Image (cartoon, rainbow, N blue to C red; front, top):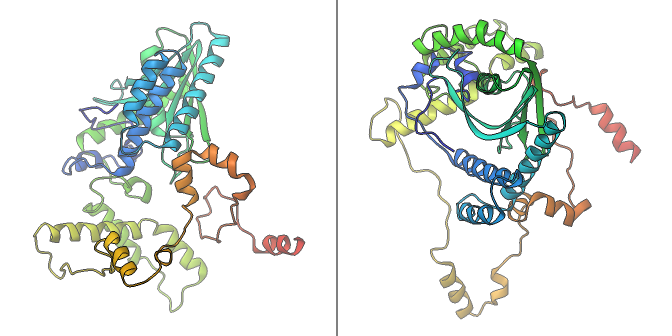
Length: 388
């Protein structure tokens, strides 16, 4: 699944180096890092690939079960992950069957290295699933995360996968259109799709990607820091361009005695990255101090600590010996819905509990006008309450 070599201009980082071209070279000064979320995602991808190969008939049931049992020994395997893998495999199998209805030679390739170095120097990536048929090609990308919905429309990672896949398979089929699908099962089974013609894709690659990739490879061009661009950049804490952009906001604040709500809205609109930037600065200073290096004006101190039992079994024995009833020492607490879904699978929990699972209306939350969620209207809420 993972590659020993990392592309400087990878498909997964395209949203960053295409917007902020000097960032790719700047990131080289910082080590690659991982996280539990990334490791969990890798484990889910491995299980998805294995399960899809079984559903497509590429491996036997015995092979599947043996390899699945090995993966199940991993830290992140659980019923929810298996359920997501089954859903993904079913989705891929159905898409494959649909393609073969119109083209009997259609085929599906899993975990394919795609090369788009014709437009991006040393550019490559790994496509989770590519379905190739006459006139059409489909890219399916599995996302295990559930914190942020990933959209297929205009997604540069997906478009670069599509570009590499087209360059690989266009000699086998006369491909006219490309469909790109994000499969993100932990977000209520969300699938987001976008379609593009080959002509549009190649024009984007030639006129937009190619010149910006040249700048990015050389570390040239203009920095373009933003909340989205900086989010996963390894240089984000120490990037001077990001700092200058965020500090400039304070110089441009309205010069009046009192801010209007409109003034506050304009500042908030520009300040999306401020909180995360400050958190990144705090992390930088903290890690420097913990490494034994001084930072003028700052020091590390012992944080708040909560008392705890040194040995719970001995605590129980001591309380019983003192005459207390053991039943009084415990409280019974139901595990969370999220934990149930991990342990038993989302579908199994939904089928078992049915209407016992409710989703109360969320607390009104401030969001930019471009947010895709519907607007909360207090008057409609009051009418709804009145009608009950």
